[in-house]
Length: 63
Image (tube, rainbow, N blue to C red; front, side, top):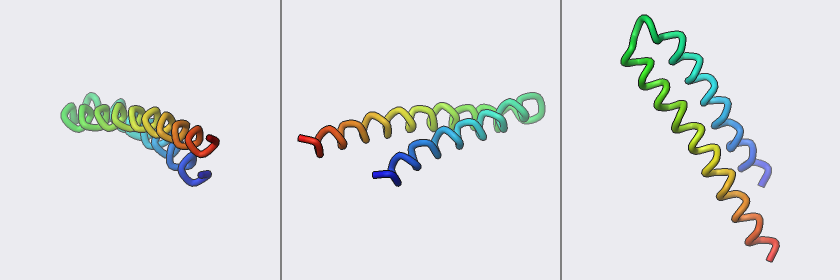
């Protein structure tokens, strides 16, 4: 189960990296910045989705 929680935080790290890339490209390549910001939103969504899924899985194993 520790491996799943590491992947969960990897999504946050990727989200921060895509956010930095999107902000730094905003003035030069607007389309690339939009794609990076989309991946930021997707990574944050995946973080919360995986967190919720892991908690459900842990609760199911406890019962």
